[in-house]
Image 1 (cartoon, rainbow, N blue to C red):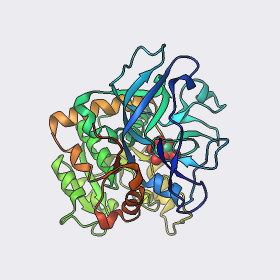
Image 2: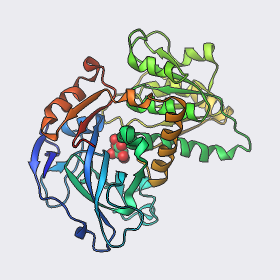
Image 3: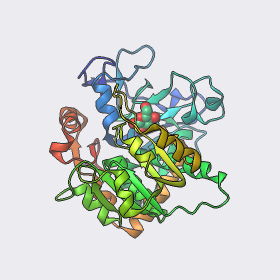
Image 4: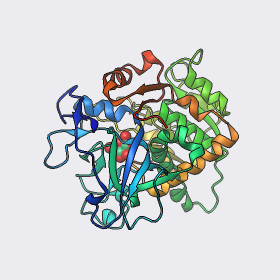
Length: 372
Ligand code: BGC
């Protein structure tokens, strides 16, 4: 079968490989599921791995099959699989409990404290940019056929669902927390999915991006789901609080770390800031009003939390938000799927769009591996 791989730590090494088709027998406990890949999303993580910023090949291989945003259909199930059957649509989670930390051992591998982690398509495990994969049923989420068209967006949404779950868990420290207003920093595909998830929870949502509003599809999508959009070239997040009021919750997903200090100064008392950008660079920031920020956090009981990856429950929360969004704003999610590339062999096109997403006005670029 065909797959798309990189040589980890070698810049722009993305290429097509030929591999053996996997089989359910790889799982000796009878829980294996063979899945034909229908769609795979491409994101900044894939671009950064191809730019040799990170990425680790599985043991015994000098290449890593890319792809973690996935959607497929069950072809065959092992004899101990009762929850899935041939023909079911599925999305697979990304991280596996292969580490030695207590969190891996209790199935909370998204909270692993190990330096070495196991993520399909990213670290130590082959990913989903392939015609087939085999996986334990434990890591597959069943997708209702009515959500098939947008299900390739579930993995990125799962990251947001985990962030929001962490926020609500942390805010249990307050006997009453009735958040009303939220800011989402960054309105790329992760930002737009965050705007959606917060709107589904009834928040007044304010999205912020770099581009000006006119003619910008991402701004139009914010408006289309009842959120505002502002360009940070025109108004800083901190200044926007004079217009909108302070934010009970701020979700950061720009990839531009200096903005977090603005975000910290935009929170209301008892509010919470969620950080989700993996900033692999070495940027530093001067002139941070540290006394002011520190005092705001202390006197206002404000909180900040980092979040990465997602577990099964977060994918399941995402399926529910998708269903609600399709009921409330039919077609909105589908508008995020801006760039479809047919066939894995056209990987150069996908990476060109990833490298130049502003030029292409791309929100989500994905491979259509097989029509369904
Ligand atoms: C993936 C996560 C992963 C993170 C760090 C993200 O792009 O969506 O599942 O944990 O990268 O590798």
